[in-house]
Image (cartoon, rainbow, N blue to C red; front, side):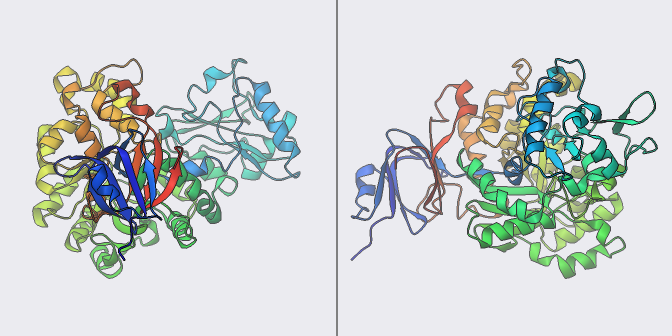
Length: 559
């Protein structure tokens, strides 16, 4: 007797995102894979008494979304340290700390999430009705017997500086900070009183915190078991918006890789994850890079190693080591919010050696900064990169010559539209002028040149429908200014950029990214149709049913 399907979705709009972008009425899932797609009556023939049949009630189904640069783990970590809640006065901060003091043994650290209103923690100083920030004396008044540190944000959450963190007297003493303590980096200001003693307030003109890694690393670090324990929370947050796969192209440090391995081993990793390696070159300062890559890194080639839920492949690359990153890296093996190492940068000459060796070993390389494009091309001229699927990420400005270089090398482009269109698009426009406007995140030019374009959240926020909206609408956060509107993608193109095209990143185009028979049953049922809903509703789209490998991993609708 032929077995029926495990799951059938019917009564809605199935957007297959296949090469013809066909629409269907229903689909069936058997053994974790799509077993039928088509007319409702035909698909329902696959049902038996054990099949779960879900009435979509007109809703739209798309392939499970693939985030091209996710930093998924940060979402769960946001709940590790207590929030101060809405704090619009020093008294508010003191009241929140007083509650924490009551439930914390004397002498133990109290570390909190940042000042300001989440998720962006914007306008920190403007929020305080007192006209100033709290200082160590204000914190001492309610927590004289505990070291207290109000940590800084991960600056990319809001893309503005300064970052603010505050320590009380006991925390300063524990960190060895006194009147003679020098700033650990030029970007850091240790605020001081009239006598030169630190007030407890630290200001950082950088988007990646330095202070907590230089002075408070033991109190603020995330233990390996904490990283593993919070991953399911992170996964659930991404599932809520239909994301079923993530690519961590910025690279993963050992502590993050171990957290993923732990979650995977316990069966709690319900999202398909590919991690690139974040190298720590300080650990092998004088190594012969070509020999090192050949002897120790060959397993990173192509799709790497692992299974359909956790794979390690590829290598993150960077140049020009910075003194500030050296300070951050001093906290190794702890990486704070980053999850990647800070010692990834090499000199230009050493980077060329690395990239050439990776090209010869067919190892995928990922870079996020503009200065890497010329290096890629220099390597390409000696060892062609075509077919290696190297990734050029976080694009901001690209001229016609650079687009042609990207096309010639066969690079995949991943975006950071939350920053370079939505948050800083107006700044880029002011910088380059109207005559060069079409160089700002030129997605249509790239797509028309045949370059695979993949959207990404960078965890700011977690929903891929924010980047989807950015590339369709091309509006800025400040006043809705249109930025390079002729570079907008159609909704079909944008949907491909978070599904079928994104599967190319991990060599999985034959497994996922479209709704076709035989492919993994990764699906998202949406609360509105991204192809037809009003444009201003695009960033609000959520999944009401998310399926990974045929398993329902999130549901807010009746099933």
